[in-house]
Length: 115
Image 1 (cartoon, rainbow, N blue to C red):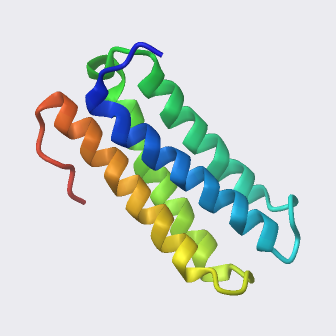
Image 2 (image 1 turned 60 degrees about the vertical axis):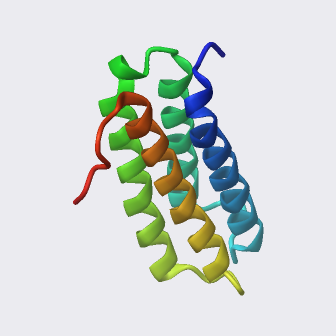
């Protein structure tokens, strides 16, 4: 991976998000069978892939869109989630997505996106 040290927080945050997703999947009343969790994992992988390309200026728009989409997916999952003690995992997830988004914007010298 030939990325700048400024993106390390984004990678660490995506790792944290993946760990939270793995825990949610394990706690789910239908472990390993939730298509929504699979799609969310794919969004995380796509964001990571965009960051790993090395030229964040060329991939930033796509990466930021993936992070925003992942946030929307987290919201949909949280509302219908059956996992006990799930809220801290969702908080971890949203904090991670925010950290990644801020790191990308900081690397580009941009102000954070606001919706």
